[in-house]
Image (cartoon, rainbow, N blue to C red; front, side, top):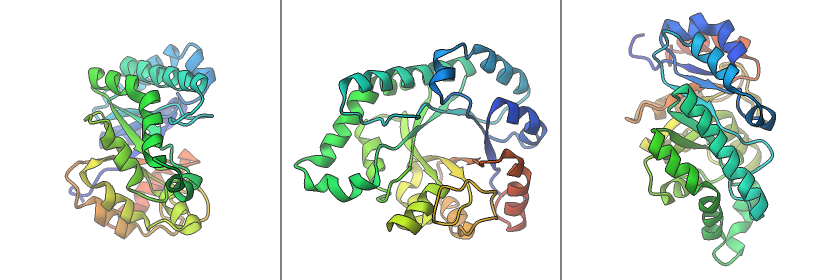
Length: 272
């Protein structure tokens, strides 16, 4: 049992308060998810940070946040929107610095439409990457300076290699890969993408973060682990071959399912 990977969790501060004892029992990695909306980012978020730090007294697991993503992509064509993306990324890194967080999740810009259409345009793929650099270069530099990783999470991605190419194009150790198991399973079941374990295999040791959620291959369910139909043996089998020690973050629509998720993976002999 002690050799099994330890599951962390994605929680808001109120949910952290509920599950604090569970998070401390094995010093589980934590991703705080309070800082995605513009209302929080443009308001006074410091009391939320202070409450989180108080709850994390004695916590030695790795700490990250889910970065801003609502209402935009990191590859905007519109120059005005690009400035908003830069602002949101800067705000997210402000919070990372205040928390001492070492990782921020950023959403992939690749859509289902992109997969089928970028190749029809001259330099379509190169232009997509260029747009991301225009929006993200400042954030990448700052992440390097404060010791924070930006991990790019698959959303609609059909090709698991597209955002790997994007991440590597920055030439920075501060830009790595995240996988969301439910997003990958949705893409596999509904848009013809490879199975979930293939996303892990493609990322290899570039993988530093995983959102673990169960699903049915039709939609983005965020069910308790064990309640859907993801082949967890194949996913954890692929993860076991990595040396990068990605954070295994259970991300549920209802955080009340966190203890059951851990218990179900323990029962399968896959995690603790």
